[in-house]
Length: 241
Image (cartoon, rainbow, N blue to C red; front, side):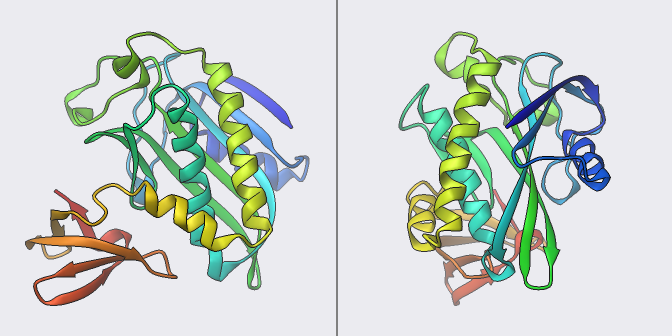
């Protein structure tokens, strides 16, 4: 394991991607930054973070996983982040599909995974993780965000949190590499935000409706029970309200 600490970078994922292209990179090389000028979340969303306050990191790992199981990597990483947060405060965190971590109804963490594929195999992955740790005030655009400091009432050492996170990610990825797919999904579903609860959603046509999450299918899509029966949605096709 190698940890490279940066003061400022555009994006830890981009920095690690450029490093991997050079070929001079070992398994579990980790980049952290005090600040990102172009941090990214899922679907190109911007990730804002106050300098020096939060964990911004990307992890490079070599893998040997069939592409058809790539969403299980998402399951594994999401569970690892949640388990790390659980160390500080139990029974408050959940995973909002596909891989945001929530504290009650407020977002505390996001994940961006970028895979390298060879034929039908994921050979390596860059796992970007942002966790709101010590930031206590958020702008209007991030009004639904919170932090660990807001929850437990004190600051947390970022290095200690990172080491716990890495340990948990290694454990979950090891299970994935061993083919323990059902076990990984079981843990993900057990902590899924709004699972089995009638909730409001909006689809790509901006139509609002009530649905209940019943499953995540093999393609990583959300399965909802609605008034018209079971409907399957991809990441860009539905919004939680």
